[in-house]
Image 1 (spheres, rainbow, N blue to C red):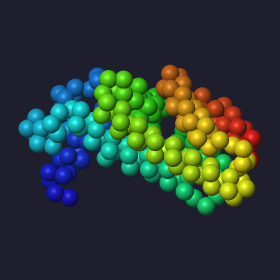
Image 2: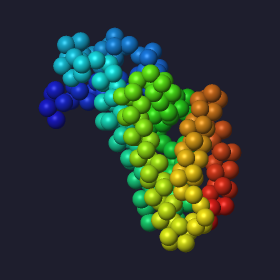
Image 3: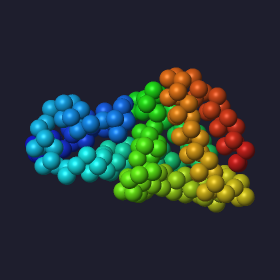
Image 4: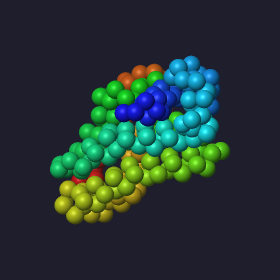
Length: 196
């Protein structure tokens, strides 16, 4: 990797860590420069402003994380209801990328930025749309394979599953404990079993 690209990746990843822990608006450009140890000139060589960098974080840091942790687990050859549960359990209990005390980075950015920044709203909408579509696809396939009840509305289930995930992440953040995840997962499992 060339030095310029390595610098850009350092800025994106270290800025993401700051934003994930402090919030986007609470993270200043000075915070980013101090953490990444790059000059303002180097920052502005890569990004016109903080918002351009924020959009690059969504595309280059969050999007691959969503693909690896939220979408690829759903593409295994297994019962889709089991895959959804296992994916959610993995996200909540076993994923080192996601910290209980900070919640879901995509949900945090959505709550903080979508109301006033259209570009963030579109980028985050695209990101969550990919996860939604993956859930719908696996549920529709499960219906065709006889593993999911044919009366199940896949779009409604996907929205319900995603909403539950974002909500329980916020409860975890408030409690600063993963203990709240366990009753949620128990109810999620019971709900998914009813869809068979």
